[in-house]
Length: 173
Image (cartoon, rainbow, N blue to C red):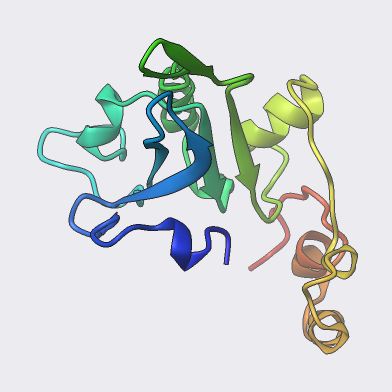
């Protein structure tokens, strides 16, 4: 578990709002707990009038960290809009500001082709930091899973999902 259940007060997980409010472990000047919020949304939950695939609610929010799983499923326009939401810098409780030391987007993904905007941005243009891992580098993945990938994939699928290469699918029929 990322957040222990004991840190999420009763009513702290609002599924209809896609929000989890949790204790941070910090306390304000009067002993009141400092709370933080996690908002989670899928890109397929766009509201009426949306033309970018992002939920309308996200466009007015402020974040200090945004996590994207399977980032190759996003468009460059979606990623750019999310960058514009990285503007939260802390919370004021009483007379104290609990400042956020950094703001960033963290992405995880399987490789796509070299024409994908993420490959262009992080490999070609060398923007930000990237950590390249293959399935066998992940201590949470069982060895037999990696063996299964090696046995069942060939060609571009082997290169992407076993070797972690950003290769095109031109020859795949």
